[in-house]
Image (cartoon, rainbow, N blue to C red; front, side, top):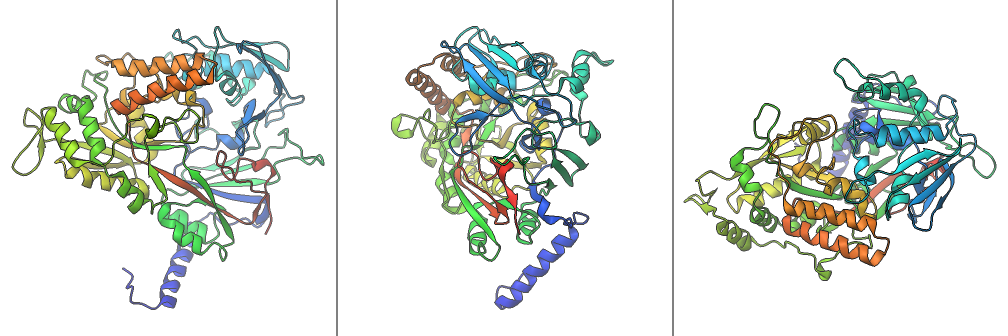
Length: 590
């Protein structure tokens, strides 16, 4: 333990030695001699697969190795050509014809044509035998019909829908295109278990030379739980005005550093080119900004979400065992119980103590920057800290207190539950600690369980045997339909009451509440309406139901800060795209 009566120079020496040791202990990740051709990034969790449609983790390298037909400008949010050269939309909005750029190639030099586009959609993204969340955002109307995708010629593809679909262009063109010549056989054949061979294709044990991509980079090497090295894709289509190939940066080293403290040490010692600046780190890193030769960019309020969620699934697993203890399931499925929890959590204290005032209480999954956001002033229900109200709600629902102030249900069962959270996330740990303290004041006991990110995902989406979790969603942009996979009662991310997914058995005993179905229906209706005013009204109604029922109890929206080294030239920081949305034109200059 450092004695804070030590003089400043001695303390600095200790810190410097710690950083040096961390660099040494970081082992074989030596800085390459051709340092200027490398961009050094980090991730808190290793990739779980190299098969994009099967990925469930936010931590992956797919944005570097794949490209969709249409991309969004990171500054303006406007749609721009990716693999597409152009597109035409019919007057009724039910047909889009997309034309590919000429001469596109895969990372192995094979031609990329409309056959790959049709294959990617018809045989993978829209395939009911492949468990992805993308079908949820592409389903149209109450029937859940999927778009029709067909080839016109080698460069043109027609997308069509049976009825109007407002966000069609955004979702028809924004999924990465996959190589038919490498994957088609696996999609059309099955293994001895009767499952598609595709479901085990391109796992992390696959030689990197077999992973074929079409983005700015391709895989060069993979060291599990250590790092991924990406190299410039020589067949990528971009050229600058002078005809030079892009991107300019030759290689990316993507280091797996699970511990935030180690990420900080790596950044401060020059081993990383960027780091997300957590609120508690802001004063330190801001003070060192000039000397450390980096710039801290302010991205404004986050478009993501962090929340507490209870498992409302009343179903049973394949062995007939309830996914959730029936006693606790009764608590969780009481609306007033969830509302009491919301009133008992002090979000303003979180903003001040955990986020250093660099944030605000969150009330909705739709970002405040979206024109579809319903503010509290416009009628959204909020849950300001109110312990008396929380206790009154619990008592009204049949709960009671014993002489020790512990909360009991009407059968005298102590009210306690296990809260899952990802290990190694300091902010999440602090939030969980405060939730624990806050709920203790209303007599509820919480048991914290720390899991790796991938282990937590498996509990939530596969075994489903959990009680509550502290989780988050990465911002999906200003278009609410991107969150339909969360609100669809059969959606892949409908974690609080997840239903049967492709390839799974029916979950016996699962019940879908009327309010769940109503939210689903409202999202469907909003996607069918082309009038923006009517769409806002429908999403507003859905938000009011969500705020009343609380499948997610939102925490805090932080301000997002990112520190990027000045050696990375060409940064055009955007609130929508961050610092690397224009990676193709960035350069390294020391």
